[in-house]
Image 1: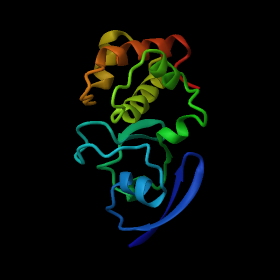
Image 2: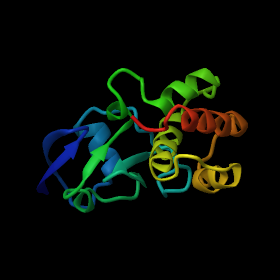
Image 3: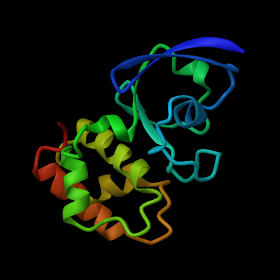
Length: 155
């Protein structure tokens, strides 16, 4: 066990965990932030995506020891009231069905739009590749990303 200081959603937390513990489990089990989901455990589905220093990362395969010097943002920290342009676009386009993958999809889209504010369809497809939506809402996801881009894409 080791003690780590993490900055999550603009708050500092101290956790005592094994250095190899995936960030996902620290977020969920130690900090109670359950919006980030466990999907596959091998960084292939995208359900566990969070931001580390503004970049989308898969928290299921990132050891907590690798995240201590960065700013971590989870879906709970993207906006306090759900008013981030990507969240609003997701709602406007009725993207979620079961909703399980959506926090990871939203986090990836938000990081992507912060770097590419006016993306093409091909750029969206490339950025979102590797996210698995069992409900198949990919068309609505793409529409929502375009809508968020029109609205400014980032908060």
